[in-house]
Image (cartoon, rainbow, N blue to C red):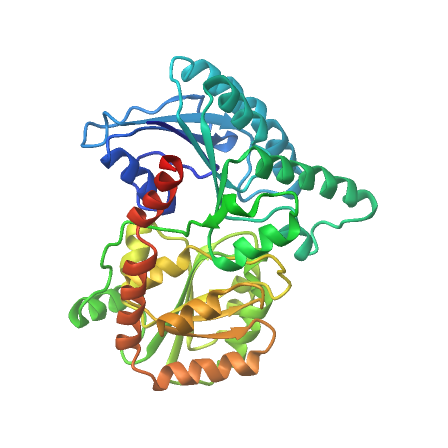
Length: 409
């Protein structure tokens, strides 16, 4: 097949490791031609064009088109909104110019954003292609949950526009792959016009690499970054934005300030980074370290030198989320402590696989209890359980098989 993949992720090489590139390599490895459309934001000062891919085992089967767009990631809401509105037209123009001689059999695309209906419709009608949505975010309801948008008043008009786009996206999709069963149930329940048979689980998936480290390597890494050698390290890595409920995260850190055997490592960046930085500078908490975003390979190595992975989600979410950072912890063989809303089914996954603890992101006392419970647990064995669960449920081959079986049917 000729497979077109449209995403907001900044993909520059098919050899990168992530939930999208790992899945796309499965298509390439199975002799399908993969054509990627990925944005290059204005701040990078580069023009639209095909990326020169270095010669490797994938170079004959993969083409990457970078499309110049406005700034969408890590910017203010106004610029993000305007850039998102212009995105459809920029994608159509680029696809019609650079991929005009390619007939696509399958279109893969992910959310966010929901405002990519027109380029998908353009290619679907032009090539009579099948369409498969990888649903990673339920917008605009997730934005409403966080209080950034409302369903009434002036902001209500914006909500109705994006809700209309969301419904159009679902309608044009032949199949919708959701991250978990809770996502499947939510989409079907809130979109009664959809045929439930076209909605299924297609989870976040990766090419699994054992990222765990031995004791000697762990000590070396901890020394390098100034992390205590004799404490159990709880690491949070990734985006530090509104969806993560940073205010609650800070309250949890403060609640655990006197737990001597626990050390908290926060690694990341985002719109709410300043809040944590202010807290760190003010309280100088002895069992806490804050680090800016690291390159992926360096970050993965650092995670392997920790003991427990942390996941935070804002308690106001009514839309189920399933952060891909869980997979990073699992392949490092770290058990997971998740403090989330009650809508997600992360809790069920952790309990089913016996590799972590869960609490709702409203009660710091319960979070404190979970930390103490983790201190008493055999984290190494729990981490092995998580790695086994990863192999059985979240490999890139599993995602590939789910999608291609649909097309065969």
